[in-house]
Amino acid sequence: MSHTLEILEAAPRRWELDLEEVAAAIDACWDCVTTCTACSDESLAEDEVAAMRRCIALCTNCADVCATAARVLSRQSFGDVVLVQRQLEACVRACSVCAEECAKHAEHHAHCAVCAEVCRACEQACRRVLDAEALAELRALAGG
Amino acid sequence: MSHTLEILEAAPRRWELDLEEVAAAIDACWDCVTTCTACSDESLAEDEVAAMRRCIALCTNCADVCATAARVLSRQSFGDVVLVQRQLEACVRACSVCAEECAKHAEHHAHCAVCAEVCRACEQACRRVLDAEALAELRALAGG
Amino acid sequence: MSHTLEILEAAPRRWELDLEEVAAAIDACWDCVTTCTACSDESLAEDEVAAMRRCIALCTNCADVCATAARVLSRQSFGDVVLVQRQLEACVRACSVCAEECAKHAEHHAHCAVCAEVCRACEQACRRVLDAEALAELRALAGG
Amino acid sequence: MSHTLEILEAAPRRWELDLEEVAAAIDACWDCVTTCTACSDESLAEDEVAAMRRCIALCTNCADVCATAARVLSRQSFGDVVLVQRQLEACVRACSVCAEECAKHAEHHAHCAVCAEVCRACEQACRRVLDAEALAELRALAGG
Image (cartoon, rainbow over all chains, first blue to last red; front, side):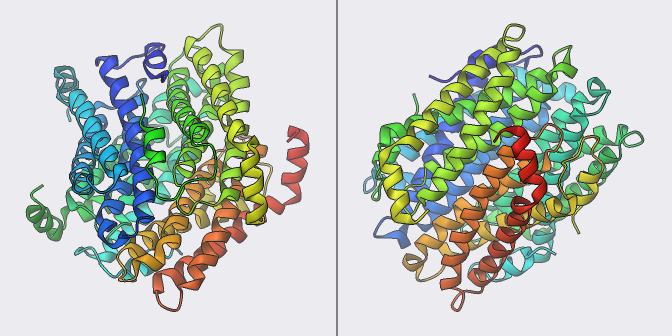
């Protein structure tokens, strides 16, 4: 069990967002960083590595983009909601494209099946924060 | 002198973008990661740290977002132009907000003056890639 | 629940290490990245920020070092055990120093109490991998 | 030209290390992050990708470890010299192993030739900081 929600709730200045949704998105991002990093590495070791190139490349990008999304979401105090929005939009794109590619290999490689599932979950967790009314209102205030 | 352009030009599959502009954006991102990381750390050691909080926080986020932009731009082979666009949009936002804050402290702290200048340069280098006609065409093809 | 152990076990080439211990260390690292990132940001927003400088600085470094440890541990296929050892040694140091500093503020700030606890847990999970006999044997083979 | 030395010299609390050497190591690390990230991606697109697996994997790890070394070196104010030492030792190992592997492919792939050269330069720049007498003295004081 992560300590994400607990540490977010201990902040003296909080996001005016649902902290349970934010914590869920952070945890989903780290799970996605691990599975994308491992899936990329494990695909590289498969016999048919030539068929796995796009999977390897997309997983590698996805891991980096999710890691930055998790960090930006973890900084409430002086965080910029427009930046949160943009980094989450990058994250949703990376997860969606990566999930689609991994799903093609899911029958042959268990790691791709796991990775596709985790990417989809991360995409959804990020969309939940992005689609919250609170974010739209904050963005309007921030002029973004 | 960095080896960025040289390594990008050695790729078997290249971005259909101006590689000099891409290399300039990558180098500007890393320069921004260093100055934001250092400016954040140095602001923390200033006597009036309380006045520097927003600067510290924005620099920290900016360093992470620029680092991911640089990595995404460095991966041409199976790169997704829609992801490039979104990560660059996040980067432009982070740099712009950070530059504005650092500029307020530029008279009193030399590190903020340097950081504001480097953030502006990074913002511009990223905008140049974002605004290229080639990116718009590629995005249309990618359906993004 | 993370998918870390599941994805590690799906690898065609595995670490000759206890994968449950490796997975526990990866998960502990990400938990530490989140709490250190958030604790650093939350300390910045405290009234007595001047007293929190060292905490902020150590947490920031700890987050970066743990993130890289988690990534290196997630790549089994052609991973270098000597590098694993060195990155884990850096991680153990970062966690230990950060835990000590956060513990000093634990009475006044709940986020420091959480962060100190998570840093200690991460330090221990990494030590468990470092101290495994299997790692010593592999290192001897790798000449490190 | 990077602004690394300029921002390091603007710090109110400085490393008791030669800042020109530190700045050179930071710049060498970022150059290595770019070339390793690009070399990994470009190797993935080569026809004989199966022969490039180890190169891809080692470059990917090297990029992460160098990025963390650059960040740790950029934070002087409350930096821990024992952590600097350990992260640089990880970095030296990652660069050395990666350079050796890339050198094997240097005749066939220009990106591997560039990457091997940049890894060697980074290894040397980090060793220069590691071997400085000042670091040994500071470490003794820090009890590391």
